[in-house]
Each structure stands twice: as C-alpha cells, then as structure tokens.
Length: 144
Length: 144
DNA sequence: TATTCACAGGATTTCGAAAACATATCTATT
DNA sequence: AATAGATATGTTTTCGAAATCCTGTGAATA
Image (cartoon, rainbow over all chains, first blue to last red; front, side, top):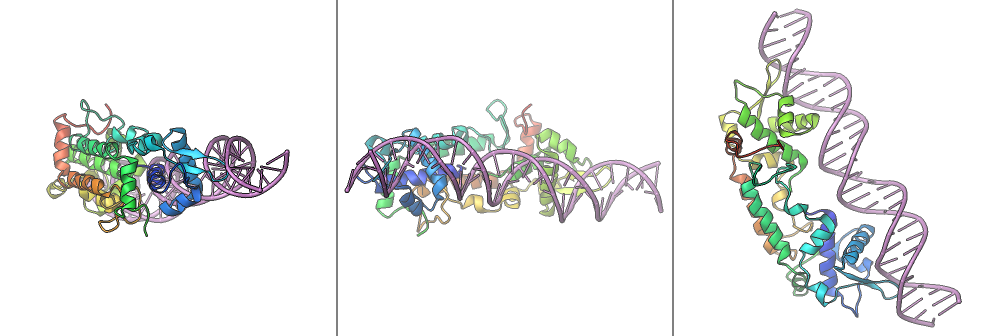
C-alpha cells in the first residue's frame, strides 16, 4: 500500500515524537535500532521529512532529530504526501492508468470507499496520538 | 496493494469471461491488447491461473482461454491467492514483520478494518459479475 | 502423418525501489 | 581555532519484481 520509504518514515516520526524533545534530540542510530530499519536508507528519508518541516533536526555535537509542538500535531497524511505523493489515494485497484467515475474499472465502485478509508486513517491520526500509544505500551514499532 | 501480476490476472480473467466461452476461446494476443498488458508476462500469469483451475485453456489450432460455468462464478479472491498469496490480508500497514492484537503497531486498530474491507471486496465479487459490467458498458479494463 | 497454430514452461534480461557508501557540512565543546 | 560528533547530500550498488526470449508440447486440420 505504502512504499518502504513511507513505512520507515511513519515509524521514525512516531518514535522521535515518543522519545524526543527539543531538549532530548534523537540520533539516527537510536532511531534505526528501535524501529528496525536500515540506517543509511532511513537517514535519507529523514532528510526528506526535515526538508518538508515534518521533523526538526540539529547538526553537530548533541544533535539529532526532534519534533516541536506544531509538528507533533501533524497528521500522518503529511508524511505520506512527502514520501509517496498523493497517487496512493487516487490510483486504481487493478492498475488502470485512468480510472474514474466516467470510465471506471469493474471494481471501482467497491474500491473507492476503501481508498477513502485509507485516506481518513492517515488524515485523522496525528503523530503525537500514535506516539502516545507507544508510551502507554499499547503500540509497537518493531518486534520485541 | 496487489502486485502487477495480480492486477493483470484479474483484468485478464474478467476479459476472458466477458468475451469468451467454450465455443469461442480467446487468444493471448487478443487478451493483451484489450487489457493493455505485456504479452509474454501475461502469458506466464495465465499459466498460473490455468494450473489453479481458475481459467481453462486449449492448445493447438483454434485454441485459447475460456471459463466454464463453475469458473465464472469464482470470486476474485481466488485470483489474489493464486498470484499474491494470502499475505495481503494479514500484513501490517506500516511494515512490521509481526503485527497482531497482542503486539499491534499504532495504526493497527484503524487498519484492520480496512484490510477486512479489501478482503470482502474480492471475496464478494465474482469474475462473472465484473464481466457483466463490461458487457453493459459500465466497466472498462483499459483506457479507451 | 505432416504441418501449423497456440499455450506451456524454463532461462534470461531489464528496471526501479531499496539499501549502502563516501564525502561534505554544520555545531558544541575544549 | 581545532576537533569530534552529528546530520546532509550526491553517487553507487544490490536485489527482486517485472518483462522478455527461446524452446517444448499438445491439438486441429488438410
């Protein structure tokens, strides 16, 4: 559904939100270990999130990644847009290049509801909300 | 969501159902042209469907593919199983290797409903049903 | 029964996402 | 001002899905 980049991005953002703060920035090694993701690849993805102002970063000694209050309240859909673009929410279920109300694939009617649900899911969930599940022990970002 | 193989497989099966019959078998060239799919790759996928008895085939002169009555009534989920396996319906939304009720990812609660909807969609739609949309002009398998 | 047509199936190649690498740049600390 | 620790960024490599190629096999028909 989402690309690997997007999956790592969401997991990383949630972890940073749960563990970090302006005062306690989180390094790339720490992040990758806790979300079980490849280091160099994840570093690249965090650059994208940083450029899109979804996470903040600080270079140098004691540097790392963190989220400010505004960033914590962003919905996951912003991460999806930054990594995968908006095609996820308008693509056809069986791969037609164009699939619309006027020229639909046979699955279109049933599939468009699902697409909308996926969109709602990431639109209505904020990074902070997800992070809270972690700190409460109700959510995990890797196998324990 | 589904692999390319699965997308072509569903499109091909629907086309064969709509256009073919025991008396009028459909050749690979005809199929690929009408569902806009690569020939050799699609031929390979149709082999899989044939082995799984989802479509019937006939070699030799005037040969081709067709569906008998029983095959026409099969739900699309059989095609998904044959091409992609059952992982689509139990995988995690953000890529965790294991994601279950007892050790869920933060999106699990919201995502499991979506997964179930996807499953229902292909479980409750038969090949023939989809084919009927085609013949009625309410559905398409490629851009016109 | 020979030929031709069309699917079957193994082997190979292509292509892009995913991952790794190497180097630059920035900043706290001494 | 020098150094060390951390992210930023461009380049390269890996790997598997997707696509192609080539040969085998079965069936109809003349």
